[in-house]
Length: 297
Image 1 (cartoon, rainbow, N blue to C red):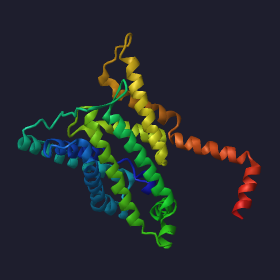
Image 2 (tube, one colour; image 1 turned 180 degrees about the horizontal axis):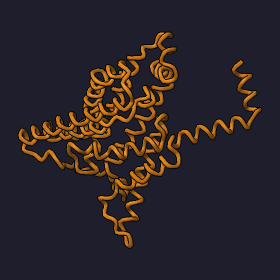
Image 3 (cartoon, rainbow, N blue to C red; image 1 turned 45 degrees about the vertical axis):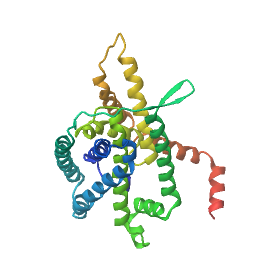
Image 4 (cartoon, helix red, strand yellow; image 1 turned 135 degrees about the horizontal axis):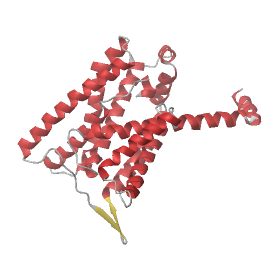
């Protein structure tokens, strides 16, 4: 969202993941189906909520020239509303199906390959992540909508004069971002106890990943997510042992440390460093520059 419309931090983004978690829970307790089958529905519902929030709240505010701080405050208000609705929905689930709707967790099965037992979560999440990354890469680089999206990023006014429906690009982008958050929420109850607050608790990790990778780079944010995830797992593996004996409840503190270090050392993220290095290498290679100029001419 930041790259599409220079939108500030959306504090309600974590609630979209929580919606995905509760869609999966309803699929499990209400329809007696595997939570994995809720991925398409979670994508549609979370994406629709994100789209409506853009059309009803953020688009009108942006058109009136609301400042970045004002938009951030609006996202905090939206977060409060969505969490309240999720608490109400949790009560409805408890009364209707007589189940625990706060602090629930999914049990995962395993796939046996030889002597190895591989969790289904690992297989499905890995395959789905790869498919989504490839799909969005193709969308951004090989389709007319992707070209229109990049044009809207670089110069919205010029893109609009060339016939690009900038408002449509923004709306679809919000829907896709919300849908992806919903998909992520489906897998959260497999790893931790879930409730109406789970998205809020994950928000710090999301910020740390985005800032580490770079707000202006989609692939940088992906890289930042993997780095933060590995840092938390490996860091707690060593810190939980003697002589440290740090409780696992302090695991989110590692994301906070990564966030602080990134803001102090590379506030623009890893993507900016990689981009700057490419520019320096290109400037030091005049033969390549001449070759590229001849090719363009």
